[in-house]
Length: 442
Ligand SMILES: *Cc1c(COP(=O)(O)O)cnc(C)c1O
Image 1 (tube, helix red, strand yellow):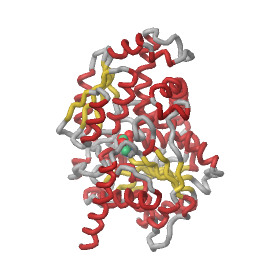
Image 2 (tube, rainbow, N blue to C red):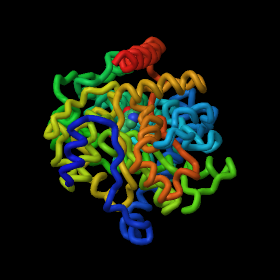
Image 3 (cartoon, rainbow, N blue to C red):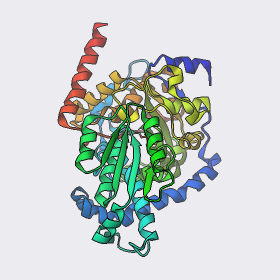
C-alpha cells in the first residue's frame, strides 16, 4: 500500500480512502451470481422461522416474527454535514438513518447475522435428526419438549466484543441450546450480566477479539455437539446481514425514492470484522447495482478493514503493526484484523473507507439524541460520523461529487443501542460534552 496512507493511518486521524480496486457491477457478475442464492436462502430461512420467533419473542408478535427495522428520516442532522468550504453538504430531506440500533431480540445489527447463524445450526440439526420433516414443516414444532431437550444437548460458542455474544446468547438460549460466549476485553459489563441472566456461560478474556475467537474455535473443534459460530469466516452470518438490503430497497421505494446512478443511495456502514457491513454491501450491490455508493466506517484506532484491503494482506494484516491500540468507545468495532473472506469479496464492490475518532462518534451520539431523541451506542454513530468526514475531506467531497453521491439519498446505518442501559446512554452524552470542552480549551 502507499506509504502515505500507511503514515496517515498511524497518525490515527479521521480520513477518507477511495478503493482503487472498485469495479462497475457489470464486471462483477460472477461474484454477485455466486452469492445471490445465499442471500435468497437467508431470506427464506428467516421466513420459515418467523412463526417460531413470534412465539418466543413477544416483541416480534406484532410483525409476525420478522426481524426488521425502520428507515428514519433525520433532517435535523443536516447542520452536522459541511463541505470543505463550510457550506451545507446535503439537503435535510435526503438524510436517513437505518434503524438497526432498535432491532428486536438483540438490540443491534447482530439480530440479523447472529440470529440467522443460530437458526442455520438449529435447522441443520432439526432436519438431520427428524425434529422437523422438511423445510416446509411447521417450525413451531421446535418449541416441543422433545426438540428443546435435543437442543439442550448441544452448545453454541462464539467469540465477541459484546453484541454478537448477546445475539447468539439470547437466540441460542431461547431455542434451548447451551451457549458459551468468549468475551474480549472490550466487552461491557452490562452485556455480560444480561447474558448470564439468560443462562449463557460468559468466559472473560484479557485479550482482544481475535484471540477470544481463537479460544472459542479451539474449544469446539472436532465435537459434534459443539457449534462454533465463526464471525471471522461464517457465510451464515454474512447472508443474514445481506437480507437487510432488501428491506431498505422496499422502504426507499415506499418513500418514493428509487436510486439511479445519477441519484445514487449512499450507504455509510459501521465496520468491525466486516461481516455486517459486507453483507449489507453485497445485498445492496445485488439490488441497486452501481446506484449505491458504499463506504465502511471504522474507528481511527481499529481500521482493520481499510488496512487489510489497502495492503492486500486482509486477515494477515493487524492494525497493531501500525502502532494502533483498538482503544475506542466503539466497542462493537474494536477489531484488529478483518474477516478472512469479506475483505477479498468486497475488493471490487466497495467504494471507500472512512475512519472516525471517539470525539466525532460521541458528538454524533449526542447530536442524534438532541435532534431526534434517538439513542444509539457509539459504534452505531460511526455512519453519521463518517458522513461528516467524507464531506469535510477535500478528496472525500470530490469523490462524492464525482459519483453524484452528494445529490442522492444518504443512509447512515445505525447498528446498536436498544438494549444499552439508560445510564450508559447518559454517560456517552456526558463524555461528548467533556471531549468538546477539552477541544475548545486547546
Ligand atoms: C458488530 C457490530 C458492528 C460491525 O459488524 P462487523 O460484522 O463486526 O463488521 C457495527 N456496530 C455494532 C453496534 C456492532 O455490534
